[in-house]
Image (cartoon, rainbow, N blue to C red; front, side):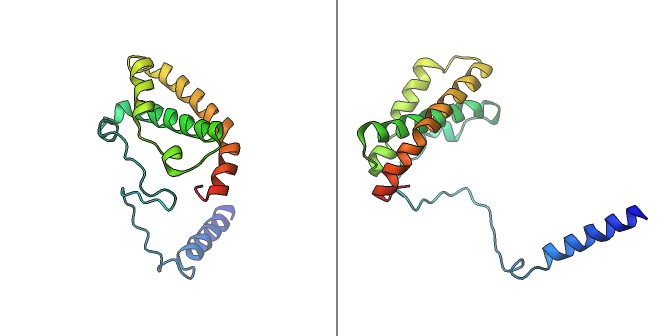
Length: 137
């Protein structure tokens, strides 16, 4: 009896989700193209990061984390959130990675990535206020 009740509820849920108005109207097509409404002229990631093998993706993530932390901290430090400040070239983040972390083990890079995320999150609230005022958040 219990199994029949669960099947009935599950069937009703599935039918409700798939027959909801607008479900068929949504044409969600995944894409790898990135477009931004804020600072659309952002510099692209370095090619080596875009082409990095999947097994080394943690290196790309670390450079992204370094980039994010550096940029949010810079926004707060200078009190300016123009596009060049918020999204500069990747050179500084890439240099930090190559000079300090490129030869580290995976587990070490994951710890460093976590540290950069904490730094970015610590600066995020203040940076958001500055960027909101500039219309760049």
